[in-house]
Length: 229
Figure 1 (cartoon, rainbow, N blue to C red):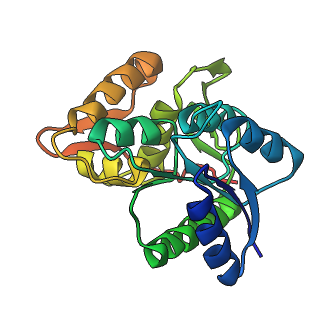
Figure 2 (cartoon, rainbow, N blue to C red):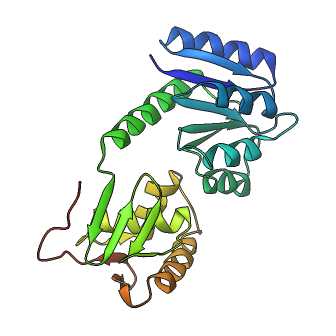
């Protein structure tokens, strides 16, 4: 049984979500504002958080930012804010999904199941990857060249991890957007180029990223398979 924290200040929606999610076999804890959400988050462990953005005291963006400093617990944002800018902001804070109101409860339940499956697979994944003189620490979201910490942003780390995981394969910008942002972008592919540019500066002479003009990016395979443990 998964434990889910629902953060929602509309009590009618809160009660609806509580009943449907419990009926689906999950344990539910409720919070009505940002301060209460963070208090309950620190008191117990959760498998997933449903987070409304327009909540009192501390808004959902602030709650998400605080939680992401401490944990990678899956977060699905629920909100009436449906602009592309709002969705990009939420996903850049590393929310796992973003659902706008009004929404279908059956669709929400399927999204919850999908996010929980991804989270379970992530827990089983290797925690360290090495490639030539690079080392990626998946738990700590850290990357090293030799003994040097590369000080990557979370997005830069995720792009590098994705390229190394699929070394030898060309990943298009759309591949990266859909995998890492979990959102269909239109006209925003240039954001990948910006992250790659910054990543290359930090990698310096250890930049192994190859640009495939008009297609995307790749990292070559090593003759000897990188060590994963």
